[in-house]
Image (cartoon, rainbow, N blue to C red):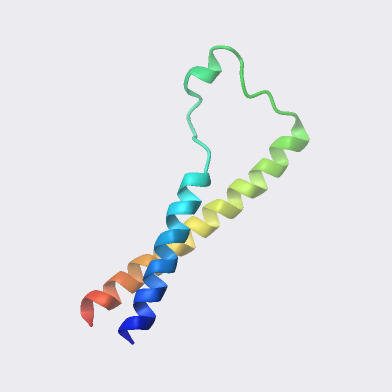
Length: 75
């Protein structure tokens, strides 16, 4: 049982790291000064669905990570 939760813990931690690193920054930073980041309507809608999917993956993997960490600590 410990091996099972260790594998789940490892997979969820890797997916959490990757999903957080793939998300774009919410702040404009210095790109707002030069007017950078001009996207059309279609590009934005596709980007929104990708961001929503990444957000969902991040949330689920964080929940699985915390549950598996608590179970491993209890074992």
